[in-house]
Length: 247
Image (tube, rainbow, N blue to C red; front, side, top):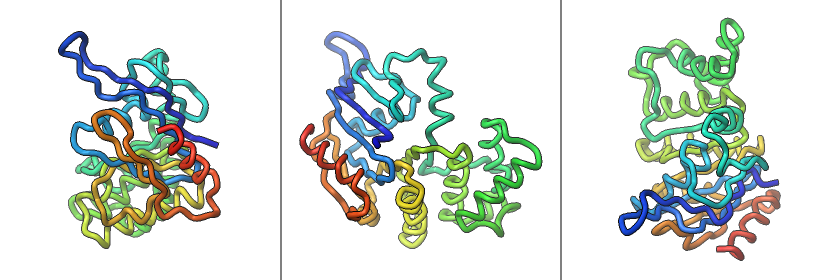
């Protein structure tokens, strides 16, 4: 089953002669259990595409379905709930609150889901244990390495049990060892838990983690190639084949 289905997606800023066509008739699927990497130069449209998938930005036309729910044309007031129920975000700059401990940073995300008090503390501790930071619950971001901060960010992204994770350059600020630890976690979330992972990246050190690499240029998908895809992930293989036919 596809977690994300994008069809004929268009995003235009402005109108007339000054209009900027950020996305031009994009078609792309991401299967459950697939780790897709999205590549493109600055201004290519990749951030716009991920922002629409993440229900942060509205498309001009076309279709973007999140687990079968159409988001294009949906009232702005309904998008936050779709985002909260389905999508987790990981950012290059970590976006942690410096005055909060690792555990408290995760609890903030749980609060948005209505989980508070002792339940939130226990759940945050469980999530940090899952990413290998069980001994860092009361540690502040300033006392964590870059790789540890990113793992806190991953734990926070999992607070709502999202079926889709969107990661924007998650390894760009990390050394190669820390970067691979982060990618091991993301790959595990895809392979073992069936989550759809979209990684925006320029980091050629991590390309071997991709099930599929999609290139976008001037608002169009120019290439979609299979990465290091295991045969036991047939849904991702089918999605890759379909994209190649449609691109």
